[in-house]
Length: 194
Image (cartoon, rainbow, N blue to C red; front, top):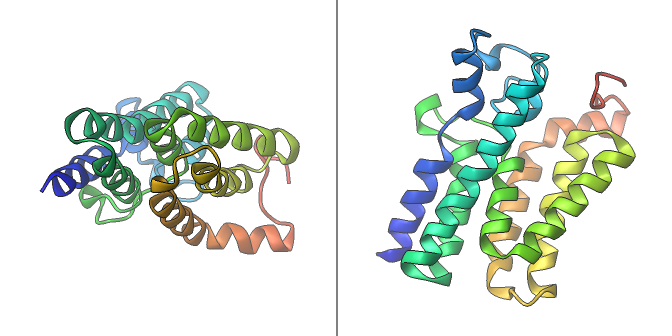
């Protein structure tokens, strides 16, 4: 039951569509009508409002971190894994938006820090490094989720590897169109440059 409660907490917090709520509150309409059609920070950035994009990023991080942290405080380590997986699923498939959400990169960053700070640091370092080198958000995100899964057993948290590996698989699957564009050299770079 504790794992079920943790998963429910993770899903409900993870499914809050901050990108959509913030852009609508700012009078910028429905963020799903532009760019990739997703509700995450990368697509919010396409509105041209960097402040809203930064706020979306931080809130999406928080909704990944919070349920994992609370699950750890209330029920211990095993429940944290259930909260982690459910938070990312909630972001990617929110019930409020007919199960069409974002791709989970920022939410999984929060999850990684919630599970263990060394995993979170591996995630952040990979994401920042790849983005700085290639300026491609999708490549940085996919690299980071793989790094987080790999970091779990390397840093002494093998119990979190299964959920992080499953999350990585889901996030990479959701990026399949990005992968196609990457292979063709057509994936846009941050800042609008090809």
